[in-house]
Amino acid sequence: MRRALVFGASGQIGVPLLDHLDDAGWQVYAVSRDERNDMPGLYWLRGDLNHVEGLPREVDTIFSLGPLDQFARWYDASKIAAERVIAFGSTSIDVKRGSADAGERDVAARLRQGEQGVFETAAERNAAATILRPTLIYGSARDRTLTRIADLAKRWNRFVLPRGANGLRQPVHAHDLAAAAFAANAADATHGKIYALPGGETLPYRDMVARVLATLDPSPQLIELPSPLFNVALLGAKAAGYATGFGEAAVRRMRSDLVFDAQPAMRDFGYAPRLFQPTAGMFEPR
Image (tube, helix red, strand yellow):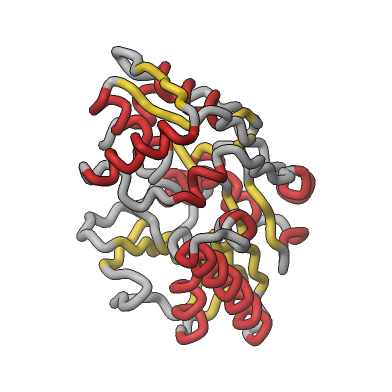
């Protein structure tokens, strides 16, 4: 019986990944900060990348679905034997690398250090590592972008964008990412490689937002303002505590294309992301 250790097992990618592993008959050690009940073939370990008790000595694959830099440090210090490592990073490694915001540049730098660390440790242990870089994740009401947009729109019954927010986006469903992680693990062609995992449809930012708003009942109004007026509205929202962490760099990116190539993932492990067809349930907290 194949065995897996899964960090982030209770998260938006982890839950559907556990289903894939269960269907395939894997024995799984799943890590969560919350106490959970074991099930046949599924053993929950309480903890995080800083400390977990009860870890197995050996597994076939380690899946990391959380912060890549933290996982890289844990992996380097761990003693667990594993032939395969599947770790999630982010396309932010490229998107935020040249950002005017120092915090965003730091995110990109930590992602790059994490990727390098995972590959270096894997090489030292004669293991095969694969890094997966998703784009904007949605589908389980646990993302920080589209679910946040839906929440704000429901609160105000409207959502405001700067005029010209037509930068292209490729939102990706969390279940497609779980399927990708499972498939990549079984494909020898993925050893030592990095893959972008965009969604199955490319559309302008304002259209992406409009589709989210259309799922809500009643459907909030989408308002597009000239940049000076939008900046005033954004300042007001920040003063009211509704737009914290939403900086100038993020606003500029709304007009920039963030498009990534899915062909290598499609070729090497059959990646098949769905079109962007959101429903209201995807933005309702569970």
